[in-house]
Length: 308
Image 1 (tube, rainbow, N blue to C red):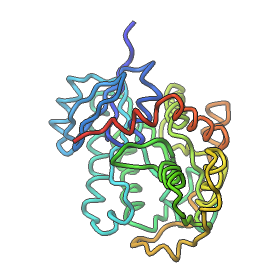
Image 2: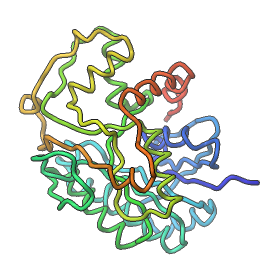
Image 3: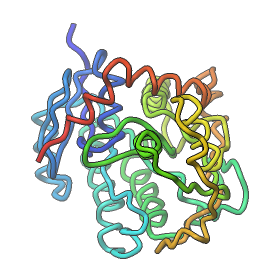
C-alpha cells in the first residue's frame, strides 16, 4: 500500500526538515524548496513557486499531495520590522496563495503560525485571546491567520514556538546554545522573556494527530512549561553536560533590538491536549529526545542537508 503524500513548503527551513524526519517513515515526504537545495534521506524535493498561485496550482496538480504543511515564511523579527512590505508578502500573501490553491483542490492544509501575536502582558494565551501583536512580524502572521481561515476553512492553523537541530546555514535556539557552550563562549539570555517551547518532532506528530481527528481552525501547540530564555538555556546545558557558568542573565531592554518583543509568549495548549486525549510531553523529555537525535545522527544529517 502506497504512503500518503505530504508536501512541506519552506523545505530548507528548520521546521520543514525536522517535520520531514518525524514523518518520513509513514508519509511520502516532498520538501518544497525555493532558494536552497536539500538532500535528506527518505524524502524528495520539488521547486515550488509560492508567489504565483496559478503556477503553484499546476505544480500541486503534478505532485498530488494529500496534505500540505506550510512552514515557509520570513521569521527574522527585525528584518520584518525593517521591510514591512517583504514581511507582508512572505508571511501573509504567500500563506493566502497556499490556502486558496489547496482549498480549490480539497487538499488538507496545516498552516504554521507563531506565538508573537500578543502584547505579552500576561501568560498562557489561549486561542480565543484578542490579537495584539507588537511588531511587524506578528502583524504579518496575524494577517496570514485571517486570510488562511477565510480561504480554507478546513485548514488547521498551529501557533507554536519550537526548537530542533538545524543546518549549516541556520541554527535554532538550542543549536546556538549547544554549539556556543561547547566552544566555551559566554552567553547572555533574557530572564524576562517567557515562552512555552516544544520539540519540533513532538509538534509535527501532534499536528498530524489533530488533523486526523478532524481539527480545523487555530490550535496552540507548545510545551507545558513556561520558561524564560535564561531558564531554557540552563535546562539545555544541564541535559547536554555543558558549563552552566557560561550562561549569564540579561534583560530584553539591553538587547539593542530593532523591533519590540512581547515579554510573555506562553501558550495555553489545553484545547489541543483535550482533543488529543493526552499531554504533550515535557521539557526534560524533549531535551532527552534532542540528545538522542544527535547520538543517532540527526544533527549531522541535517547539518549537511542544505547546499546552494
